Image (cartoon, rainbow, N blue to C red; front, side):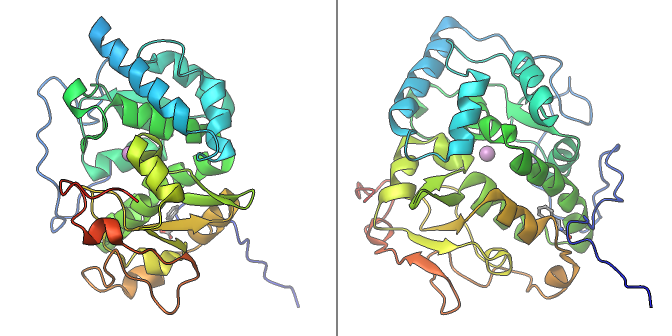
Length: 319
Ligand code: PHE
Ligand code: CO
């Protein structure tokens, strides 16, 4: 009898048509974002804005500050990408020049957007290997932390990882996954996965925990906290668990999830069909973001003292 072979890397979302922006099902909650009148439905700016010399200076100072902290804390894929893209040559980097280099490596490009864009438009761009990056740069008052993704977060945080072939494929597949999550009304769960991987992911490398998450890379406090502090938990990434885990966007994370390699991340997500997972999810999150479960593979049980002392705004030290 002929044996049926199942290709474990076959992507169950491969048949999705990514050439058009996905429709939003009528019952989907979408953040009330108002599109500036000069932009089309894809939210793309016709070109990157020009920055004042004071703004270029902010980039240079942010960049210098992070460069003191990244070696030994950022994973090697990120450090290689950073070198390759030459993001520290002076001032806010040019997205067109960056895209040319990136296209030759992994087929990705970086495109300017005015602000945070709606999820379904974000999925559309990712699926087409376009990374939408905020056009504006933070002010000196918000030097170390802003909630809205600006050009420093998007370019310094995200773009170097897009030079890694496996991670680059994961990001594009995540865009297609968005189509499906919309259809299943499971956007929040899929967003938790993005949060705990793309934004705040850690990877084991040379016996250490290092960052590959953009939210960690672009923030000096979080980079030190995520990789070295005793407060937060470090737990091995389990997709079913993470998609049931709440997350906060306004403070250092109480828990980080860890992978062994980008291939492992790819195998747990792209190469798996999420249909059953979606069908079994409760409408809200099941686990608090500080929780450690019996079923977790734990590298470090956090003391949570930073969060317990009140977290951001309380004066608690990020230890
Ligand atoms: N394979 C997942 C699905 O069936 C999609 C996915 C791809 C999820 C990449 C995350 C990242 O929906
Ligand atoms: Co981001």
